[in-house]
Image (cartoon, rainbow, N blue to C red; front, side, top):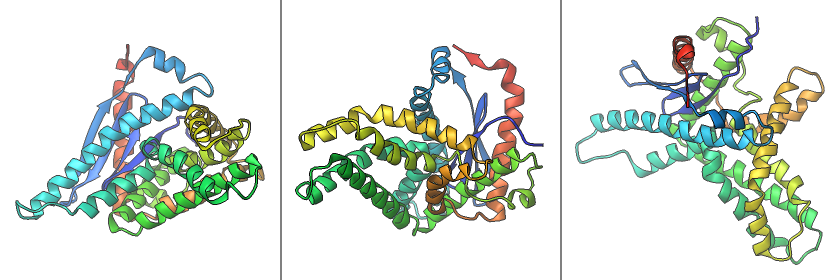
Length: 312
């Protein structure tokens, strides 16, 4: 039977992180085929817990929280990767800068951590480009906002496409797909075996990639309610309104996820799913095994730590 608990995760270097109610767990596949775990109990601050119940505020809190936990688990996977790379190379050699950079950029797309990393860039650069190209053609600011949104989408798709050409990022996107498959299998109430998990699609309505798309769409709408008289005013407005855009986008993501089983209405979540066609790839069985191991360990520890959850 379908499960009620809602879980999320994030692909990391050669592994997957899953966030539970009381613990976050990352599983990473080492080159000797053993799986190495990082288990971090969650300490929930009481006032933060309250904020997470307030519509439009909870989205901002969720982004900050996801960024903090994502960074810790990403660092763990990067350390494991560096240790193994260093072990195979001469003492005076290191993994190439291009290899490391491609990994960082790839993780920036997959996790919501990326969202904070890239949001300011994707907030400020598109209006600069749009202003430079189209400012003298017409005065309709709503049309300017639409063009700005289009430029954001083009930059985002181009960015994802080019980094996905690197082998390491391709593997990262495969683990992203494995993460989605495991969550979908769990939500369908199936036993988490490789065979069962592989039956599912790599796309999921609740993904952070979908969230990024919604911020572009919501941003176009929100910005249209505010006028600006100069480029600087336009840029300042984008920064000031960023929390509102994030908060509304999070609610839109939750809303579309609630409609995913309703015919006709489920198309509301399609823009995010389309982007996931770039940020996820079909995983192999070994990658699915890692994702299952991470999820099962998270669920096991959740049961053990549930009564001892720490609230400050």
